[in-house]
Length: 124
Image 1 (tube, helix red, strand yellow):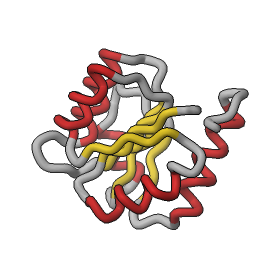
Image 2 (cartoon, one colour; image 1 turned 45 degrees about the vertical axis):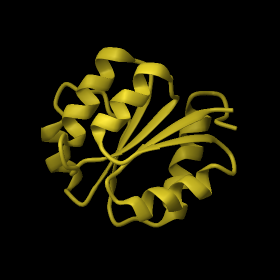
Image 3 (cartoon, helix red, strand yellow; image 1 turned 30 degrees about the vertical axis):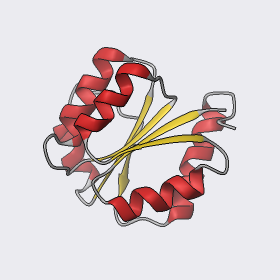
Image 4 (cartoon, one colour; image 1 turned 90 degrees about the horizontal axis):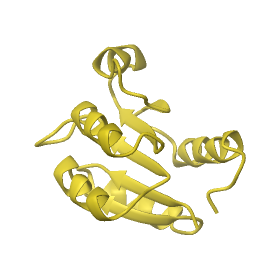
């Protein structure tokens, strides 16, 4: 079973995503980037879905650190910022997709399914 790490300070959103995604994937959650980095020290993931605007450390800094530990993990960044603004903040960081908040849950699950087909396998 493929592994997804959800990183967002919105606990309600994280819980909703966890419940929905756990039907097909192994899902771990963190409510800030520091918690996520602690988890990443002991576990590997196929996909990280992170918020951009979080307390303590933003999604850009988090993604940069993630890349030093794992160059293969796919990273999706969710934010209310425009994709153009996010692209500027993530220069030099390999991000799979910027995802505009607020979003429909079905759009996110569809994106994950698209990722499955692109990598030639399944996250199931």
